Length: 337
Image 1: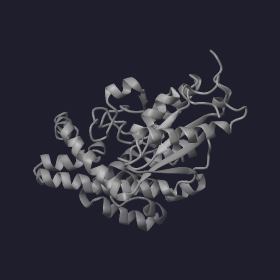
Image 2: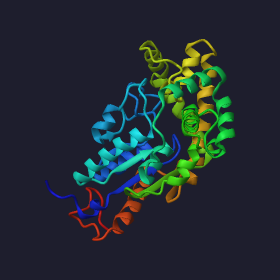
Image 3: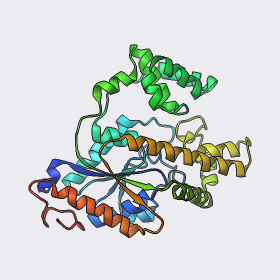
Image 4: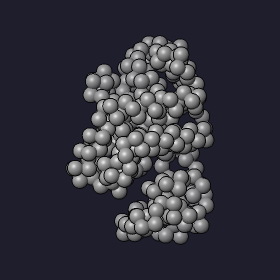
């Protein structure tokens, strides 16, 4: 087997992040096609098979043009976490490097990006019995009640976790009850300072009114594509509303409508509102992450122009490797600086 180009032996990756509906997917597809590479998703919802519309997965036709990896990994009732994502991503990145391709990671799940570029903080192994107890407690009293308990024993973790982020709240409480130490101590000790890759981090932004308008348009598009029907099918297949996957944006709000808890218009209103709130949390997370180069977009800037700007950043990134990339060692579509 031929050795990969010299600069790929330094394990570079490009990571494109930003809030939902900002335009990452469309820009990434153009960039990946220009690079002759694949898109690797960093999305905690796209890992679930059969959940396509609310997660905004690329269509089969889009995947024919640009291959997409790290999607459709597990069934909606299977457990998935950042550690499993990291292992799957490592394998895909290694494969692309062997094939002489520059990996392009794209997504809005901040924790997945963090563990990929900064290493994984290995806490205690999961305790199924204890986790079941905490899940039952959350069912009875709600996630906010557990969040208040977390604030008592691990203020650091509570400050970083949203009161309705049940998965992270349960995990933090599980660790504390297991070992009597806050999960935040494990994170502080680790620092997410490992550097398994040489990353170029690029973030996409839009002014808030424009972003919110795009979110509303996306919700309407998802509904027209059959979000209600997709949710109905998932429920008919036996996936419970209480499962983590079914609590994702879109499925949660539509499931409430299908259960008769509120009308269709209210479901749409809640979905738009909750998606705006989610985008705001994503922005808060990524703005705290170091090393991201931000590009602010507007509606007057066409996607090819944005993709060209991203490619320009990639050119300069590759030029930092020694020996510099040459026409023989540069991915297809990237002109060596």
